[in-house]
Length: 388
Image 1 (cartoon, rainbow, N blue to C red):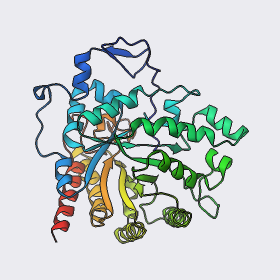
Image 2: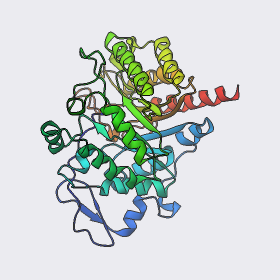
Image 3: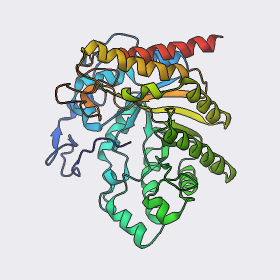
């Protein structure tokens, strides 16, 4: 996921009773009570009263999980947003804090503090933490890119994985081991040209899953991919490439447990969404015995010179069409949005006059929108299916 990048400094020189928050400049320290509130350890009266039930409450009745991608500084510095994450989410995905270039911009930098903060927040509030993402061609630190080019040595990859996966054992409930490895571009196998492919060949994917299984024997391991949702030639080629890759990984015994489907919906393309084709694809994945996560759900708007209510209706309708298909397949076990509120969306404003992109469940004032209702109704649809 090409998440909006934030250059966080390496935390240092923090007092024993405070924590350094990632942010611009030299960072800032907050007191112990404020930190405990940030981690959800303050008295319940300190939390905002929110309407029940939340999305995880509803999803849980359908044996499904709801989550959102967040950043540590959002949780630590924005009490209103933090309260909604606590209320709505059963799972959180670190948006950038577990990526290789974030943790090790220089060899051995080990900038784990923001990821540790999210892990503590999750553990102390009974939330799951989804590990995202170990190998991604856009998050390799430059020194590792150069090292792999000069001397193709798997040690850099295995060293990074060994520094991260055991650290969050018992908190992380699964890992995106390989992120976005496909880009049909003339190669027969459909693999994306990347430093990993150049250094180690197509087998790097199997090696990564084997390494992750060795380090996390009981955690579900996922391949996460985008561009699989529309009735377009490029999407069809990618679906076919993914299925071939999964069959090859199965043949070689790679320990892959599931697929994360990034559903970055675009209103301008929803005329190309075909419910039958998407349902057939989900059936193909389920037939291979794989778990399916809706891993990165949001909506990019198109036309914005219309009333906000209509914009929200169109975004909600797009989500509803896709989730109606998804929750009908019992291999789909969770829905994670790439953000919870438009306040922190990675999607740019559709135009200078439009304000924020309105493609997440909550608006910038943390009010529920049509996307929220579409997710709620999808969970209820699954619950009804389970009763049959």
